[in-house]
Amino acid sequence: MNPLKKLFKQTAIYGLATVLPRMLSFLLVPIYTAVMPPGTYGEVTLIFSWFAIFNVFLAYGMETAFFRFYKESEYRKKVVSTSLISLAGSSMLFLLVGLLFKDTIAAVLNIEPRYMNYVLGILVLDALVIVPFAWLRANEKPMRYAIVKILNVAMNLGLNLFFLILLPKLATADAPGFLGKAYIPDFEISYILISNLIASSVTLLLMIRIYLRKPYVFDMDLWRRMLKYAMPVMVAGIAFTVNEVFDRYLLSELLPADIAKVEMGKYSACYKLALFMTLFATAFRMGIEPFFFSHSDSKNPQKAYAQITNYFVVLGSIILLGVVVFADVLKKMIVLNASYWDAMSVVPIIVLASFFLGIYHNLSVWYKITDRTKFGAYISMIGALLTIIINFAFVSSYSYMASAWATLIAYGTMMLLSFYFGRMYYPIPYNFRKIIFYLGISILFSIISFYIFDRSLFVGIPLLLIFLGLVYKLEIDNLKKVFTK
Image (cartoon, rainbow, N blue to C red; front, side, top):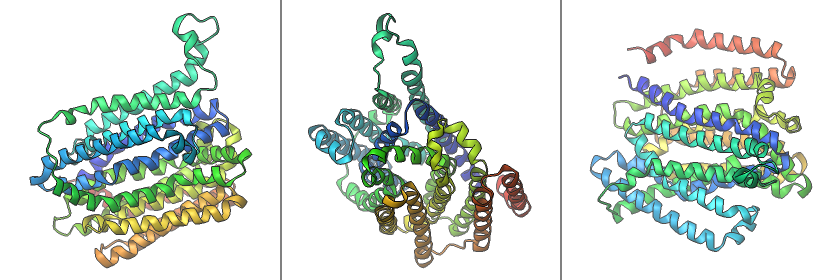
């Protein structure tokens, strides 16, 4: 099969595994914004921001190291068992330390101590399935991967619906038995965490088979080499996650206490409208990461990498313009409470930032293939530093708009730095004229539609159709070559 065609096929399935669950979880946004005021929702987003950061810390780059070493056939069994033992051991140690010092940790994270048991349990359960999911991807089993991921979020969604919508209606004062006692007023955040904990537990049970394989072998030399490869990836991952979610924490710390979580809730809800770009970029990344390694030894892989980036920019430009044009339509479907809409002005900025991040992931092939993962750490650390500096300098004056611009500047800088260093160490023949053309036109049309004509569909839809016509005229022949023999 044409390797690009195979890539798009696997990306479509991984996209299903990523997009459909995220779309199911996307339904949680209208539920949360309907049953919780912005302040309470802001507290939820703060907890989930820490989830994102600690997930990277608990993985410590072993997923990427797994892909790097698993491709060498003589290491495969040792890579699996060594990775499983490493992550299981570190997760148990984290759980022990977390339980011993949970009050101190809660104070540092600005989370109420009553939520810490749930938080620790969810983090450990999610860490224990990192290697099983990586094994499925490395062995090109996207369907099983997709099924487990979808079941996880479907269960999470169902439990949220039960606890937040159905249970309050069923649990009346005179209701008999369990339902009369199960509902606890003002318990929404705990219900959300309980739903996540149950879903994560079931996911581990579904993936437990890989833990039951024997024999277990812990290769110390292999583990050291994997850690050497993985540590820069972890640093890069933490820095990247700081770029993605740490602005919520900074908003909670830098704004006056009486409005901090309210502003954070508004910002987080409207930020969700960028999810369509995030879903596309994530699905694409999950398809290309194994592809990068498996084709690194093929003849002229740089040409394939360049084509992949070109297609990503074309499709991402369409998504950028589409989300911006229909932003007002989407907000009424997703953010049901109008009190959150004050933050709609961040939407084009965040969608463009997510697009830049997706391009960065495509450009990052050079340091992964050449084992220069330290560059990924350096670049992400620069992005994280920009995020923190801009937020500290401007949040007190401009609130969440400063956070949005910080995200865009950080990701844009990371994209440019990766391109600059990539040209030095692993030149790839990107079609710069095409990339700049599509990116420039989509940004220009987005500005015209959203800011100049105030989100008017009578202007936005024609601009979107014009852009689609340009893409069809310029790309139809190339796309036919990819998807046909």
